[in-house]
Length: 491
Image (cartoon, rainbow, N blue to C red; front, side, top):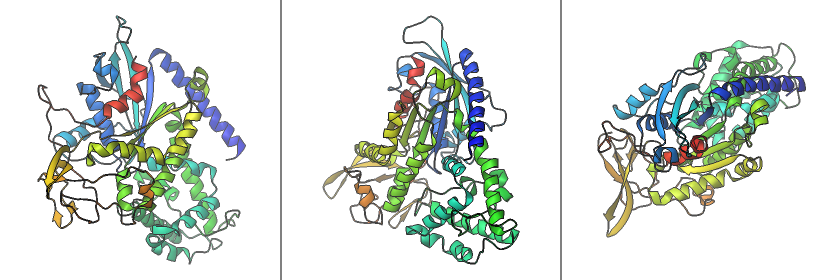
């Protein structure tokens, strides 16, 4: 990044920080970012968080709620008119009435929740905390390092990665096209469009659950929205040395120009208007999908999480930092879908995620930020039981698998409840990096064997809390997440 641009960016962030700080003097506000890679459960997490706060859900570890100090919570219009509203009501109906998981996050959205509470000291007057929740795709976060890379550098890194491991087979069609492209040839719109289409197809294939790779920038190629087909998304890497600049009017110069436009149109606005303003952050991680896909996916997820954390400006929040350089002072890494495992494996799931993020966490702690790791299920889709098989008692989970899910030769219809023995995660986190390429070997529907295991996906539960006028959503450790993220602001 050139120095003048860096200075301008810093000045812009400082000006925005001063505005936010001034507003916070009269209305204490906490800006919470919720992100994660595709299908990690961002929409479900936010909907469940809001639902439990609005309806006084069972949150025993969340002190302000457990102590009865939260008088009420209410939704209010969001402050940013140019950001779509998080459609809480539609998502909640999908979960509780249709019993289906809501649509995945494909763009940034926002929702404002005002919490009225009493302090721990028992002051007579209620206080308020305004919680602004920002939902954004984790793929966008992985675009931020592009700001410091030239087109040639990004091309070299991306092509080199695409020729390794499972990626090489997935990128075959794109590689064949790439071999016939000359960066110094005259610019050609049809060649650019074809290259972009083949490159995007490779990225989509790499994201498939069967391989579950996660380092896949540019993020908007997988979720283009209203930019679909625009020149800013019609470029692809070219096989050129990282220290060269293609001649003017060439295909390479055309691609480089569009790459820079992508940064200007997509990446920088997201960084300045939203990302740089966050106070706290939740990073949701679907570690089970990586476990299923094998060690290569696990290693890539580890690298991705390190890159995610490196994007945050972390550190202890002080008056000075609030005024000029806002920092993220708490980050929660949450391993989602803990309800797909028996509770005896939850600690192991947390240990594995902590192991995967250990270096990044140490850097964050050194700067004064607090980082926690938790195994959660924002909406619990299963319950636990013990089943007997061949004289052995097996700790199991019971739920309704989604229609089309399969275990061995059995294909589920989306209506039938089944008992599943999910197997045990290893005690040693390193084992997930060394497991056989086919993924974990375990038990599927309570029947022992060595069949290749895949975690089943379950429907949301049909659930009603006894003694309440309406249903509430069951969860695993959502209260612990709320205590870490909000507890100190509600004392």
